[in-house]
Every structure is written in structure tokens, then in C-alpha cells.
Image 1 (tube, chains in turn green, red):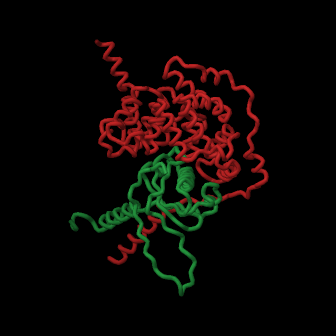
Image 2: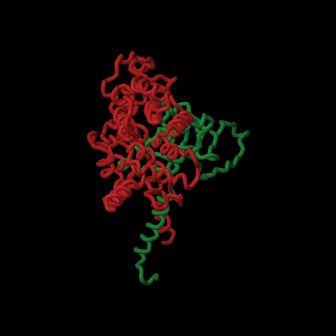
Image 3: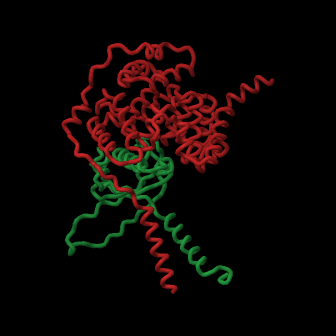
Length: 142
Length: 321
């Protein structure tokens, strides 16, 4: 095998494999701490502790702005995809897209919420491991 | 030598992963004049027209058939310049138990909810979005302005929550609206949650040839239906099948124009906007959604939905007998 493939070709094959893998595993994270997202009415006051409806509406608006930046908007965050939203206070959660045309088209994934890290003195800080699951969630009426 | 190779590969990987997660900065945020915006989108209900256009009266007149009045209400929903006035005229019919009027009320409430929740914030967001350097900023701003203009008399007390929309649609479905029943399945809260019911509902929607029911069902027939054995032999399970149901609705008479509710909601709620403001949904999907081969597949699915509906088969049977 080594004799069949020249060294340079082998190098580029490995490079292509690694690059492809990197692209495949890279997920979407939308950080609403940024100036533009943070100013949106549905996003400004939203945290993982807000009511479900508010988080749904905020996440759908964040997804809409994300798609509006894309040259292929149908393919950006299509139904079934998940992305992680970072709310303005720093708390985060996974959100699943259920519709690209509904104001309720993004549903927070139950159990994926991570509170904002509190500001602690270095002496008080301790390491806390927060398990995050990404189990699919059916949309419920409440 | 080996170390150099791995160093280069790692560097390349990091570079590509960085590129994959990088989002273009969106500069140019304007400092908003709150007072000016407050005036522009004040949540004060303006006096409405004393009389509705004759066309709407005609739409709400007593009905003789079933499919035609549904389409007529839908047509009026698409055309009404003042959705609050349209809603007021629908309310007595809905109170009297008319399923289609109840369904249409929920459509109006869903369309206007984003504006009604916070009219001032909605206006501010529209100004902010227009000022961003996004691919679709102008189209997105236009779609939001269209909603703002048609829903201008809604106030926060009129805003429906997801739960309220579900309740409205349950009432509408129980009063006989097939579109409302389809929408409930798409919202994840069907009237009955069993395989046979879902299959039967899809068949009834297809047989109805009601564009409103087709477009209401579409989200349930996309990725949400993936793996549903009850829908295995129907057009379901992929994003392409969802688009096929929507395009079939266009063929059956849904307003799929650039100003229509379907394109307005895709743009305002989903950020999926046609760059060409005159494009209808069909040409937009061809342009932006899928490559050519994918479009041929969607066209085949659409043809199946429109031409192979159970009712069509039934009629064909009657003709050939």
C-alpha cells in the first residue's frame, strides 16, 4: 500500500480525512451575548430560567437571524437540527428546530440547560461537571 | 519529518474547524431613537374602518358548499389590509361554532402574535434588522413591515401563546376544520396520537385538495415524520417532502406570491427570504432550496400529492367504470 501511494498523496489523503471529520463534528453555536442579538426584544431578557414560551420565541428569532446571514437559508438550521444558544446572561441550552416558518419553530431540549457561570473569587471556585443530554424532545402543549 | 506532517495536518484541522464555526460579524448597529420608534409603533389601537370591504362580507356570507367557503376565507385572510377588522368580523361566526372561522381566527392570531406581544419592540427589532449587513436584511425588514402594517391594531392583550393557539385549533378541529386538525399534528399535539389516526388524517387532507390543509400539514410531513412507519408509503420524512406538500398547496390555489402569508412567515419567522422581492414560493424553492436533481424529486412528490389523491383515484374509477 505504502509503495502504491506516493508519500505526498498519502499526506493529502490523511489531511482530507482529518479536515472532513473536523467539519462534520463542528456544531452550530449562536452566541446572543453579541451586540446585535442581545438587542432583539425576544432575546434581551431571555435566560434558561425564563418560561418555555419565551425561550422558544427567542431561540426561533436567533435561528432566523442566523439563516438570514446565509446564502443558502433553507439549508441553514433545517428541521431536525440542533444548535446551542448562549443567552445574554451566559446561560446556554440546546435547541431543536421543528419548523423553519413558525415563530415556535425552535424547541429547547429538556435537560440541556447550563446556567451562567457565577462570578466567584478564585479561592471559592470549584469545578462542577454538568451532564448535558441531547435526547430528542417532542413538542408539548405546555 | 513525521512530526512536521502531523503539525501541518493539525494546523489545517484547526483552521477548518475555526472556519466552520466562524460567523461573519454584523456591524453597523444604529443607536435607536426610542421616542421616534414609540411613536411609529405605539400599542394604541387605532379606530378601524366602520365597514369592511364588500369582498369580506361576501366571504363571510352563508355558505352553500364546503371547500369553496374555506378557500374564500383563506383568500380574504391573504388580502385583508387590516387583520384586526377581519378578525372582528370572523368572531361571531367562530362563536356560532363555525370550524373554518375558528381555524382562520387562529391563523390571524398566529400571524399577528409576534407584533401583538410587543408592538414597540417589534418595530425596534425591524429597524435593527434593517441596519445589519445580512444577506436578507432588506427582505426580512419588508416582511416584518408587512406584518406590522396588517396587524397594526393588535395590542399585547391580543397576543396568543402556543398553548392558546393549540386550544383554538382543538376547538376548530372539533367543529370540523380539517386544516386545524392537520395543524395540530404539525404542532406535535394531534387530536389522537395513534398510527392509524395519523395515516387517516394524511389521507383525508390529500383527498380534500384544500390548500390550507395541505400547508398546515406540511411541517408534520417533513423531518418530523421520519421513521413513522404509519406514513412510510406517503410523501413524508424529509425536508424535501415538506416542501413538496407546500408546493402542492401552491398548485391547489394557496397564495404563494411574494406578499402571501407563506413567504412572509418563512421570511419573518425563519429568516428564509427571497432576495428577489417578486419571486413566488415555487421559484424561490427552485432557486434557493435544493439542487436541480433534488428539485426533480420534489416535483415528482408534488405530482403524486396533487394527482394521486384518493379523491382523484375515486373520480377516475367512476369515469372508467
